[in-house]
Length: 191
Image (cartoon, rainbow, N blue to C red; front, side):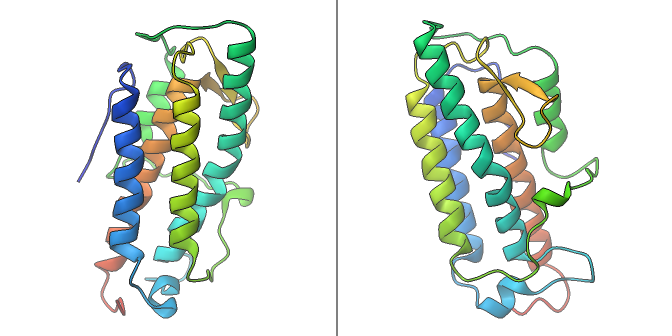
């Protein structure tokens, strides 16, 4: 199920609702799985349920710091607005490219590849990332989320607005939650 959210909205309550929904979906999907089921891979080179969750934590965590710094700088520079925000073309395009079902495969940078075996607390780690993202979204209320920009922590040349970054992270999470469902529907899944 796709929960696409247009990036042009200035309704941060909708963003916060989606953050919470994703944490709940992850807990619903993986919260009761055994360690064996969390680490089960449908085939060599394919990620497990836990691998997808770990990847989201690996990717989201550095973005949290970048977002918080950018919002702090925007506040210090008095860049305020309640929207609507202008995000440029790249961020919204990139977010749309992440939406499930995956239409384009992206090469995962080595720094974002999860350990093939994860511990049982990976669901809690993802939920904690989502809680931190919600805190940062709240911190950004009133900041011009279109003019305030960040660079990707993984590719410095990739820059987009804070509002578009919210969209990218949430679309990326939706993509991997969709892929988790795919893993769980695979023949032989021990869940």
